[in-house]
Length: 273
Image (cartoon, rainbow, N blue to C red):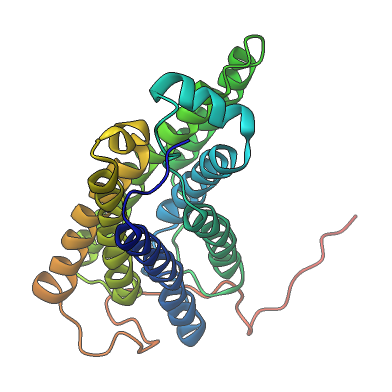
């Protein structure tokens, strides 16, 4: 197996990776905290959340399998060369585990906090069902020939596609509302930093190994970083230029009429049985 040629580049690689991990991991908390303070998830697009948990679950399957499975590592080396380094680091696995947990917790907040008339769209439900069915079919196709590297590449492709799709509902919702209230900019700033460092980590490895294999050998990580940077720049432009707000933490949403989930003035009526 390949080893590092430069100790300095190895240290830089590890530093970039773990800073990206903490940046991306912490990026979930501003939204969670904002939801808690407002006791509301109005302004947070539910399609984004559902697509996001699908994306991170797929990425977790890829990262964990590539990092822990000796069989998949062997298949990777057989395809790209035994002198190449595995393109998944420990920080990638740690981030995926944390991302699935925090995204699931944010979905829990949707169930307990004020959400107005917002709901998951039929389009989002349809996309999610199609993705899950596709993943199941691919598992059955890979099983006879033990094509595990191909299978986790499918999950990697899913996470790339879901990354591209998941941001669109939130960006469009911000455009419709002409506001980013309820959508945490802290999330975006930390997300952007993580994307830049994640891409830089791959660059450092390429410089040390004098090859670009890790870029196309893990195209999912490459495209993920590029997608994150592009969409985060769009959200920053929406928040600071198009729809600036003075106090995002104010729980009163002026531009929308919010219908409480439970009307305290109404008592539930029991049906006659």
